[in-house]
Length: 247
Ligand code: NAP
Image 1 (spheres, rainbow, N blue to C red):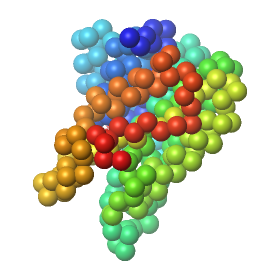
Image 2 (cartoon, rainbow, N blue to C red):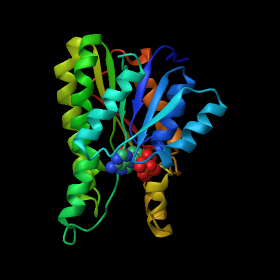
Image 3 (cartoon, rainbow, N blue to C red):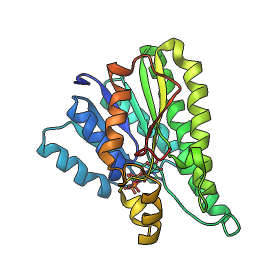
Image 4 (tube, protein in one colour):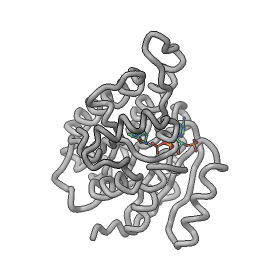
């Protein structure tokens, strides 16, 4: 049993999909959780659902492509948590798929800003408080595509591969302060993101997954809970693959 009682966590992109499942998983283990999304409208139903279970999940809104919003969110989270943030989960992410020949600069810029530059801003804002605490867990949500590449996803795969180098390097810089930095790399998970795939694409993907099903958000949340708790206290700078055996 992983016990997060007394721990505080900030989960970006927690209004649905994987981020929402992570928030519930951490809160059910006893943590006090703040989720983020672009608007209160998308996060309020999650907070209401959590209240029915007496879980401590609240929400802050802001755009992760804005450095000022990332800093403000961390500041507000620290204030709400009495100055202590134990766990940061960088989960907010988007796809804007296109073959490279057709990919527009805006599609490149938007995906990089959302999935990768946000990592810089959130980690920058939490690293000092975590160093003072001499403890912290940073868990970044990557993708199998960052390891394998995928046609139509040059922008997305770049962000997820970049996240690996970022996490391995930061892990080495802050290990002496007992701050652990790891990546959870999902395969194909049933969320709004993969709902965009057509039947033919889904069939092709399923053929590559030995466990023969898309993953559930819950599968990723379990891996995050493991990396957030005491059972993983000697693991840093690594990637936990959660992809049904496809990679
Ligand atoms: P999702 O269902 O589309 O949810 C995305 C979340 O990110 C939402 O909470 C959304 O909030 C938030 N978000 C997006 N852009 C934002 C922005 N600019 N500012 C603030 N929040 C923003 O996605 P998901 O499938 O759960 O994916 C979550 C993470 O897992 C992503 O990093 C994704 O790359 C990764 N992943 C997913 C899969 C998969 O198969 N689903 C596979 C590998 C990796 P709003 O309510 O504001 O829209």
